[in-house]
Length: 113
Image 1 (cartoon, rainbow, N blue to C red):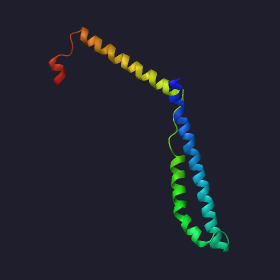
Image 2 (cartoon, rainbow, N blue to C red):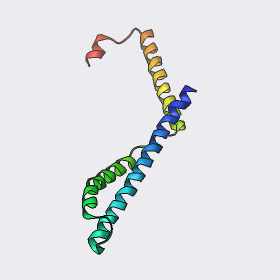
Image 3 (cartoon, rainbow, N blue to C red):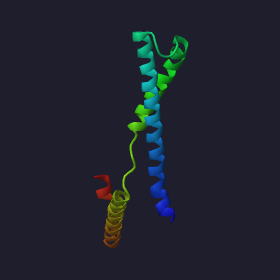
Image 4 (spheres, one colour):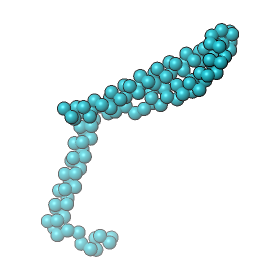
């Protein structure tokens, strides 16, 4: 149960991050649209509200870009394959270590060279 929770947790975090990114980008697009509408047609939000929203446009675009370009976690199968590969490597290292110990270890001359 604990292993399943550890695998699912990054996916939940990524889903929240993507949702925040999309909402931020949507807000930024609405604010930019309002600014363009005001500048071109004289309608839309008042200048004061638009100017106050300029930092939020930048923040929304930055947050949206960071959230949507964040690395998504690997599927559980890839984690399992990496774990098995690492386990094989460790077993091979242990076997090599055992073989060296059976032969009497590494000599002083081979350590220097």
